[in-house]
Figure 1 (spheres, helix red, strand yellow):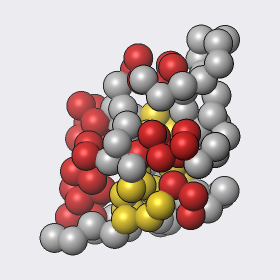
Figure 2 (figure 1 turned 90 degrees about the vertical axis):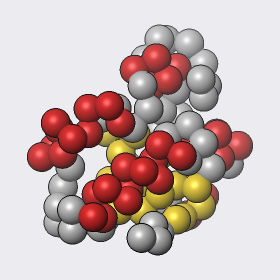
Figure 3 (figure 1 turned 180 degrees about the vertical axis):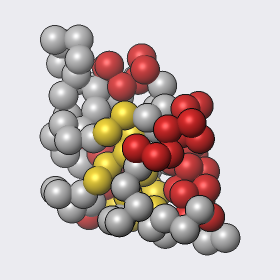
Figure 4 (figure 1 turned 135 degrees about the vertical axis):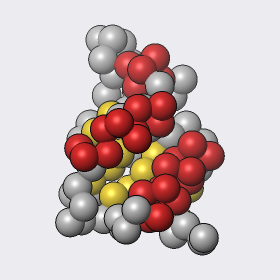
Length: 107
């Protein structure tokens, strides 16, 4: 199954952005409006992912998000992988926040 991919620079501002990285990665820096469900929890929490709109899936570099997007598409959802992940997001100078009170970064 081919998974659609989009550049970090092309993710719409109002997108449903699903961040599937681990907790420590999330705390260090993430997109302000992203929803955090680690890849290890996605099967148990898939009900939290909307089925009525496109879901943009992101991780650190794009591998985990590709797997999650493929799985969501297999379930009949519309999921797109964010190519290059949060590293590309950060390089594109897209907005980021941290949960630590320090300057956000991609861990």
